[in-house]
Image 1 (cartoon, rainbow, N blue to C red):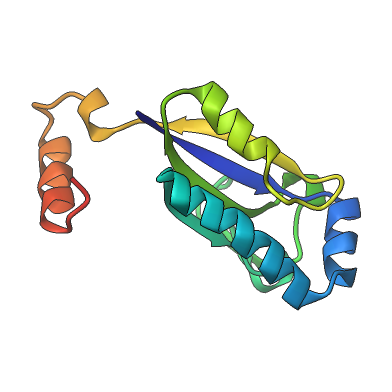
Image 2: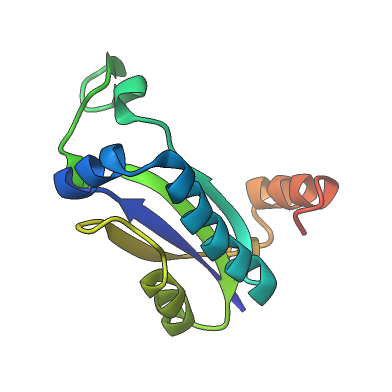
Length: 139
């Protein structure tokens, strides 16, 4: 099994549709999809993100980090939420992504999440992280 992050990305079209959709209906639709993931035993985590207007950006392109309030960037560059699935293959992650009840115009980026076992096991920081993961029940 491998973990994949499904990153939801909105567009102007999908953000507008989301603003017009009844909130209770969206919860019902997403809840049913999330229940399918849970029943299939593939859901590891999922979170939606708040309105980008409530966020901030820390820009590291200068000598010191600069913090700016939202709104920022183009809609097509903004993440709206994510799923982490534990599935057998990238193709299985893609099949689940195709079933997400997303608004028209939305996009979903799929990226594999490497495990700690893929990093040098004799590295001091990996040893510390492994201990933390074991202590917190993540391993």
